[in-house]
Length: 400
Image (cartoon, rainbow, N blue to C red; front, side, top):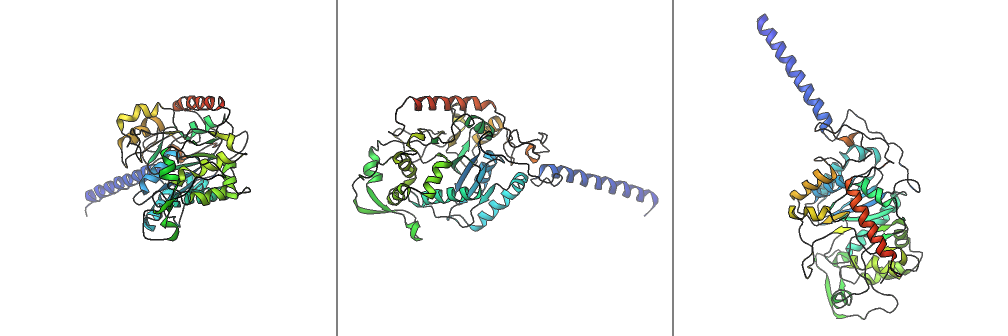
């Protein structure tokens, strides 16, 4: 090789190596590892004088890995605790993939506040395995974290309409004993079609059947307690969940046994426990903080939300909405306009200190996680909460 060719080769090699270094530099900022910034964990403070924290139970089934991870990113905050569950219909490979995605988040590795259930629970449509899974999740979250204030249930079909800073900011001004649970004792058609029929969930017995069994006879309505029903989507206080799980009163166990043979017990159990408990019946707020669009008369599930629903949805003052398509474009609108969240990145909050750019995730660096900053949606959500609480305070009895 002549001197001229050697010089050209050296120049080309140097340029190529420089290009590789540049690519490595970019990937170091844009990937989920951010190895240039080793994660550290600042102190997380809970209790009076600090913003409230939330325990999320997020569930899904087969094929929901990406949806669950996207939902986690949308509601993530280092102060909260998260439990993800792919039910028994999903595969172990899906759980491993979800776990790998969770571990790819630098904040999760630093704060250790997200867990994935390894041994899944069955999920029979309309069966009692659903309420069993929720109670198991609540028990796990009570055991692993002593700091959260409210328990929130979400599914892969849900999505937030506010940031976690907005949620924490608004909830900072209300009593941490309140329970947001849509409920009524006016059972209507549900009495004859849901409450009185005796059903058996085959998932309890590990049977292959995926639908509930119906007995030929119906049972009378109970005299020992009043049955309440309502939305299955709840925001429950820690103190009430401890009452349900630890059960120093026998009421939670009695109603759990009764609800085992009720269709859709997740629409009955918590509602009946709280409204039959002298200690907690006056802590209810008759709202689930969700946005739905129903048929008239309503069907089993609400409408799929699309771009045409966006304005009504974000102006509703709700914290969450359901249900969405797997890759619905309206989710991208919420990410871009409300959550200000980039693709495969957590929703930014006051805790995120990285520079916002297409090269860098602002939540790859963090500062004081005990500070929250309200955004534009907080005003709408706060106004909705104020109205709900004003309606509640005008009623002498919150369980009716």
